[in-house]
Length: 230
Image (cartoon, rainbow, N blue to C red; front, side, top):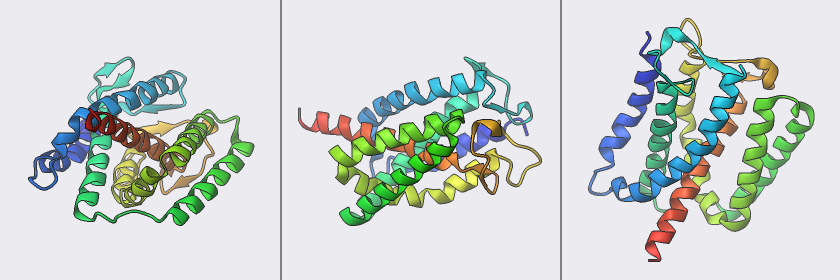
């Protein structure tokens, strides 16, 4: 079982990586933009991860990891920040290649943005003293505000993908937090989050996922725009 996290990460990557070379999808052509965007995301989220791990806000069950660590993070956790964004951003561009109109309307996007922002602000009012909730929600609010006000079309395109990947998100994250296995792969100190879970998944993880993936997507689009303007 000490390879479970490793197999989950690599398994998430395998099919998207192979289909990156499909003659219609050709996601490999976006690698020049995707990998720098992923590096920016990792600079933010891995730093955040290291600080939270060192302070005991969350941690990792040795029974499900190989034991190799870099800066106190399991090697599987580093792979998580590569494999999961790769799989999800590949899915986004594949969906838009197959279904070019796969976007939300401007009105729906505006309603979603306002409602989600209001919800996050209200929750922060009550849970501002929980570190995971505070950092996670503040980051999401700032990022969503910037994208909505300066690149609204990108948000209209990304949000449908975000809802589609809820299915694999609940599968993978569910296992990591204990669904269907004897114990948790990743454990959380509930005094640093709201203590509300969807099955075994802390509700904050849904916003964490949004912030992480939207960071990579926006970065990829910005790098693509720069390359295309050369």
